[in-house]
Image (cartoon, rainbow, N blue to C red; front, top):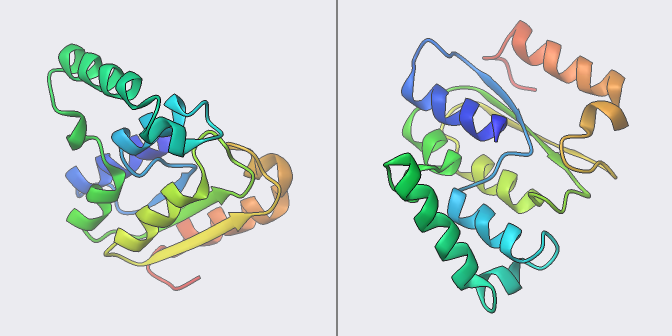
Length: 147
């Protein structure tokens, strides 16, 4: 959730100049299908288990007081141009790389995408610690420069 919150916050607050986000979801609705599909079969979440996802979203909307459609890092990066370094963990079944790829495709600002081989959900630092540190530090040293 942290990656999605950071991306959405940057879209709403110009004081946030750049974001590094690992394993973001594209939208809450799309993430709910992954969870309803037992984090392995999103097609099940969009078909057979879809009513469970819909109930979860409706309950969340009721508790939060705003529409689930508003929870979308994909829409956030399209709303304001800011530099992003998006990290996708290639073996992630919790939030597959297609989420990060959708966020990347929608981003209006300078953007970079790093797909980390064999890494699971939010595990890029553990799989490639030196490369993780190098990329993040380089990005924040000059977020406007291409990577």
